Image (cartoon, rainbow, N blue to C red; front, side):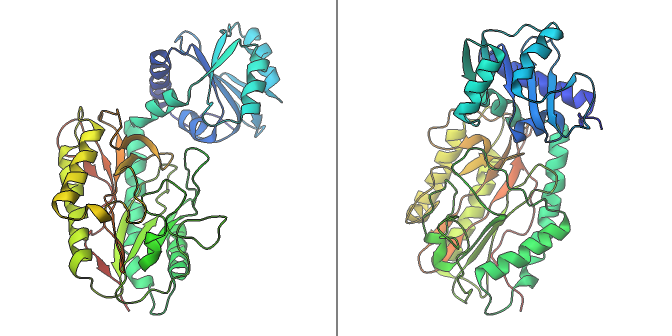
Length: 396
């Protein structure tokens, strides 16, 4: 079984991007071992490591523990990381004194073990360089994201028919999960880092949308148990409340992010105004979101629009406010760039971001939309989640 599932051209493009980011960070060589980055560089997840030199004359080496059937150019079977150094020496590859590891992601004990196994005098964090490389998607990655977006849309168009009067938020979520899985959703909701968890997505009915969560999501929810304090909490869906649905869009290994607002009966007043403003903010930021613009400028424009409308108190939360309005998406749901007030990011063509200017209205719940966009070389950002954006009334 061939290890590399990417085409040679695609693999070379991705490795070149990683090497460029490593060089910019002053990293001569790195060992990659986390699932998201292994998948990015090979097209599959396996148990093992990739040794990458910033020197283009040195080919990457793939060290595989499991599955044992993988093979291909520069694929080496090992039983433990202590085998890596001798295998590199056998191939005539010199290991520099400083080695890049995914220090933001791997356990401290593993980092020390790898340092000792390679005989490195020091280790440095290559996580940022890998995230920077992944932030600008290749044409192949964009094609996978567009497929996920289309399937994501297909699921959302079925949601109005899934509701039944008297249903709880979790009952509705289970029905959406079923439809999504049958549509091909992988179910995997990859999140970068160790301080956020979620299962398949959020369905937030009524006041539960105002329940603060410990996780850095735009919307919280109490959840069903303190062990996973986010999302649906068993609220019965009734007229007069909103239901914000933000469900898994991973159909290809690359996920889109999309939120739509539903309700059992029409909403009026402040909730309707805030929802319309969310759509307007998305439209305005999509117009502004071109290569070269500062991410902080997009955030500031969204906040200004909320303030001008007298809705800043409810923007990106009410009892607890999120400190961003958009984030990158791809293999993981929280990639670069982040659209936040202190962000130093400058948008580039090929960035894929989820804009989610949401509002929480006390007594009603969350309203607003979220769409996934591609930053183009010129012109407005392209929305690749295209479901209707108005508040959608459930069918009975």
